[in-house]
Image (tube, rainbow, N blue to C red; front, side):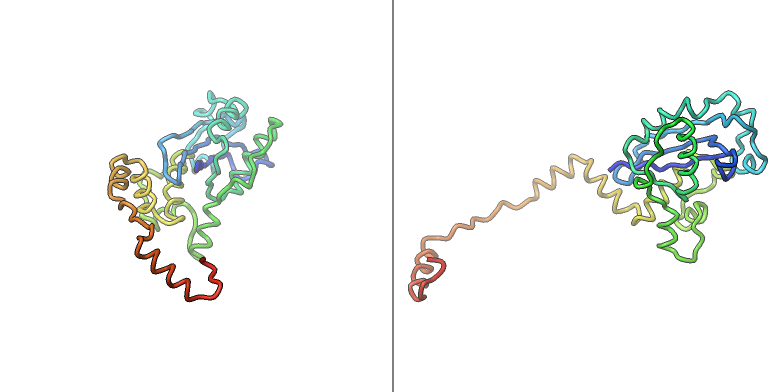
Length: 222
C-alpha cells in the first residue's frame, strides 16, 4: 500500500487572495513505513514574501528568485505522487493551494477521495487536546529539535512518524515489515510447520462405521 506524507509552505493563508506555494515536501510510505524516497522542491511564487510568512518558514524573496515556478515542477510532482493516497495534516489547507495551482495550469485537481487528514484523526482520537503537528510530536515523543522554522520536507518527515503513531504505533508495523523482508524468518516459518497428520479412516474404523449404519433406518451416510 503506497501513501505519500505531504506538506507545503506558502506565502500566506488564501490562494484566492494571491498567496502561492513556495515549497513542497513529500515522503513515500509503503505499508505505512517510510521507504527513504522523498520529493522536495522550492518554488518561485512570482510575488513578494510577506513578513508573517517569512517568520514561519524563512524563505526569502532573494532565496526563491532563481527557483522554478509551479508550472515547471507540476509534472514532476505528479509523477512522484502517482496514485498513492495523500497523508496531510490539515488537508483542507494544502489541498486548496494545490487545487488553485493546478487550476492555473488547466490541470485536474488531485481528488479529495485519496486524502487522509491526520488532523481529523487526531481530533477523533484525542478530543479536546491540541492537535497541531508540534503538539502531536510532543505527545508521541518525536524529536522536534530541528524545527525552529517550518519546512515542507522536514514537516512531511515528522508527519510520517505522527501518522504511524496515530494508526496504532510503530512496533507492530516494524515487526511485520522486518519479518516480511527477512528470508531467514520466512525459512524458519516453513521449517517449523508440522507435517499434516493422516486423516483417512483405518479398515477397523470403516468396519465399525458400517456396523453402526446397519442399526439406523435409511441413514444419510450409507
